[in-house]
Length: 207
Image (cartoon, rainbow, N blue to C red):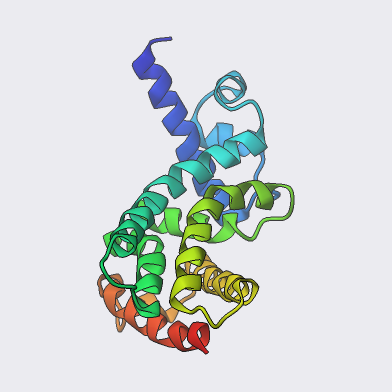
């Protein structure tokens, strides 16, 4: 098998797996269904990923990588600033990248978003492994928050940041049902959505 065909096959498997996992979750998705969707043989899945769990984590990494990279870019700007950022600025850098997936308005971006929502609500041990892909960047955001809101205990801020994550998960996991993305609230208005979320969350973080 050539390098190019290997890459294509791996991409087919990842695309099929993400679509299935996004709609049916880890437990509701079988390798057989993924193989059928991808149009490949079981040997190809075993060769590239080894197991359904490893395939799931590979999808998590593929979807998470650009989000975490953009969060890191925005966080670094705040960290290197000559002044301490506001809570609103920190939260904007945190919530914007995952929600920007919706701005493309494509079927692929909606699947990415829905998968992002469901991967963080899976049962253990899959949930724990998925969380590891986001833990480091979230710890950095938490550290900056402790500097900006020094009167709050780190454990309290961690709990509140976890609630922010839960809110994002809810939004991403319920895209198809949400009125936020109807004709009255198109996906192009992500900046407005971010602003409203940040305004809502900032008070809870600071007080």
